[in-house]
Length: 334
Ligand SMILES: Nc1ncnc2c1ncn2[C@@H]1O[C@H](COP(=O)(O)OP(=O)(O)OP(=O)(O)O)[C@@H](O)[C@H]1O
Ligand SMILES: [Mg+2]
Image 1: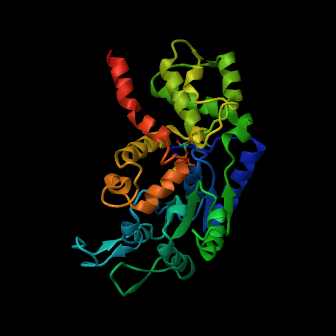
Image 2: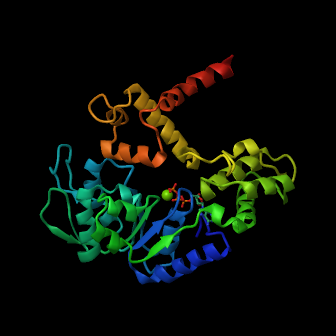
Image 3: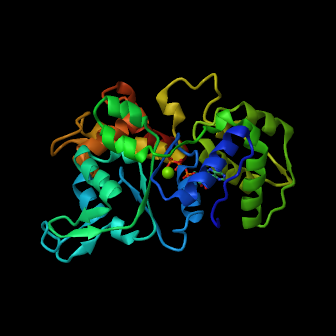
């Protein structure tokens, strides 16, 4: 792979690599589960790259990023006139991924009403464009990923059991970084090499106390968080030794108690935006004055994000957080 190799030699990670090698040529559906930043997307790409479909496209679609009303057309395409604004016939992602792989990220956010349609493609390899009656044959391998507990969602009737079983033909569970800390030296080496060469630095060592700090840390944002911290440390490095400032780590294991502690930097930005919208709408989610309308995303998507990000939607904390940025700006300016 060009962009990211799969780095790790711990027993837990070797199991993952074995699974990737086993399933890649098999052409079956794959369900990748793991916390944020554990490498779900890189694993999906590795499976594609190791499959006979590697010459064809790897198309990724994040089910949580697209309003549910638009998702059907995004997946299956639409006929001209299917809805207001549908001025031309448009192919969906399934057709774009013809003879390749379609990566459906955050599959837990696929609306219930679309789930039978996905099941149909998986079973019959057939789709219909929105507003059309013609049945189209597609040849696409589906790899799905989620950081939610999909089985729990099945129990709660938020995810169809038949689709779950169909996707779960070959499940891959990615271990969180805190469960494979033996891989830290290898990962550090890899990221240091990558970022140091990018900016023309030569870093040969990792400071001893930094190594201790990184070993103690819980890594709630997993590999992505490690990668970002190494990039920052490389930029700051003035000698050939890498130092990490402990303030760059969000919390130590002893301090991580709330759901919010487990967020990546990206998710934190997202949480701040959502909290600010909630504050402006007085905690209302739906309706024309609600936060969902403000953010121009469907209510269900917002609710799912709120749950996932652990936002305390009616709490005072939310309102305080929403007003923090302006205080910070004031403090910096003063
Ligand atoms: N084993 C690994 N070796 C090297 N880099 C990795 C590994 N796993 C993940 N990464 C890197 O970490 C970052 C996060 O990986 P990725 O986007 O695949 O995570 P994810 O599980 O999809 O996260 P999210 O749930 O937040 O979308 C990427 O930049 C990826 O290249
Ligand atoms: Mg991802």
